[in-house]
Image (cartoon, rainbow, N blue to C red; front, side, top):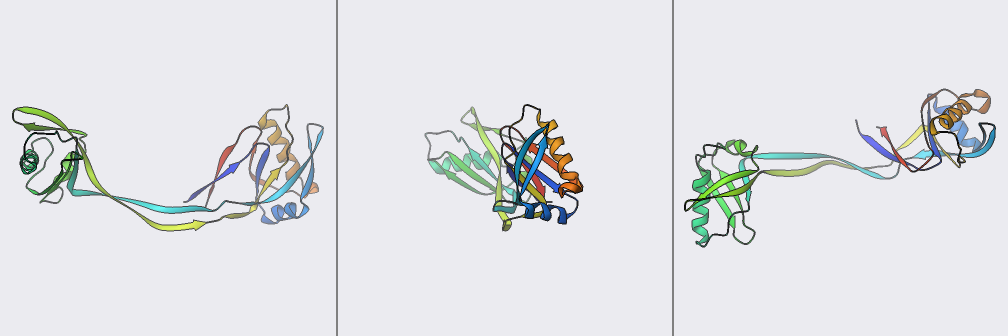
Amino acid sequence: TTKIPFRLNQNQALLTFEDEEVAQRLIKMGKHTVNLDNKIADVSVKPFTLEMGIKFELHVTVSGKRINVSEVPDLSIPEDWVRDKLELNFYKSERGGGGEVENVSYDKQSRTAVITFLRPGAANGFVSYTKYPFFVNGRCYRLSVSPDTNVHLEKFQLYCGISKKTILLKGIREMEDDEESVQDMIEIHFQKPSNGGGEIEHIKYVSKGVTWVCFEE
């Protein structure tokens, strides 16, 4: 289910009716005089339209053959030797799994490397590690290790939703009563058939600040 957010501003209310005809009738009437705790308030009823938005599916694939390595120490040895030592370090690694290494891509400037194993699934053992030991010339360094991931989007769509059962109330005057009490008074008014209303499924009133309301597609 897609959840679509809507920004509800101060002194506004959203009402969703069981019957679409009730909402459309109230919208055609436009202006309404509401009795809020013996105080008359003129409010306007607007059709409810969601702003233009975007929805998509995010897919993340974790490679079973490659891991990303960073914080490779700056060693005073040729780059080929660093690649060889990285390969030896991850080959038949007792802690992470590892196995025969197919390729080591090392970048001295960024101090990063990508280790590609020959066997699918060999990289899975390193997923639980964030730091991994790297032994060089009798010293132990700590490498940062992370899984190699591929991220792509699917079902990219623009949407602009309209709820024919929902109305937006604007111009509700500020009241000394608490938010819930004012919301109850609004609900009572718009539930009465004599006021052009009907049975209400959901209502949300905001007296101060803003809030976000989610609609399910």
